[in-house]
Image 1: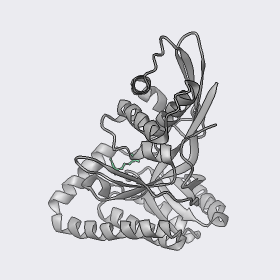
Image 2: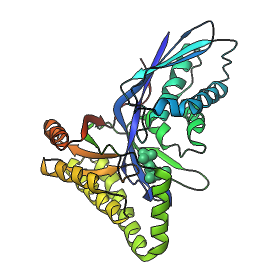
Image 3: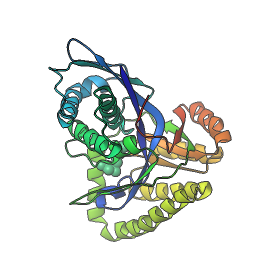
Length: 313
Ligand code: PMV
């Protein structure tokens, strides 16, 4: 039996702006998907991950395709060397949290260990990326890079080649995630932002310029481990996201609650118009912010970012 685990991810800076080639910073979160691989008479898959209702059924076909791609990339023939793959852990199988990438990365690492292939992290990341294609067609690669390398990842989309640079520092930050309970449609909202941009090019140019210097400051603040600085820049980033029209009443309420209860900064993460809000907190304030979210009727989760990447357990 071999076992491996890999973390999910959040976008800390740059959702939406990343679509237009501006840099983003993503980070691994503490919650992980675990994968066990063991000998079996016949290949089988068991998925015990907690989930947003309906998620696993909806993604089942893509999951099978993804695992087939991983086997192929690793030159493993599951008919000749059958194994049972079992998924578990505390990372929610849900949208926007890098669940598919975490599973791909952990499956690749567990198979690597079980078959004694001796592959390094770069190679495992490439295999996880192949697996991600089963879910996302042409993925950006940011999610699997977070799951594999962990920590903080600097990412820039490019026509030819995406830049994916692990910032390579040890920094664990406490955050509270507030959940609006609203599932948003990424394709639709990305399309609406594009329309807005075409209708107001000058406004968007100004916002893009502000964001471009903000994200460089954010990278510097992370590298200096300047929590107050990171928090302030999260607030600024959120302001820009609000201006491009991807916030909503529930997100604003969560951001407001977080800041009133001592968060160093708060912003939406991912697509927006629903989904999740992240609040950066000093560890001792995490419970207070989480309770305040819950009192207002939202689900809250206290976790850490900058978590360790894929590992054999
Ligand atoms: O909601 P998520 O975590 O899948 O993030 C979407 C991020 C966007 O920038 C809005 C879209 C994208 O493809 O980068």
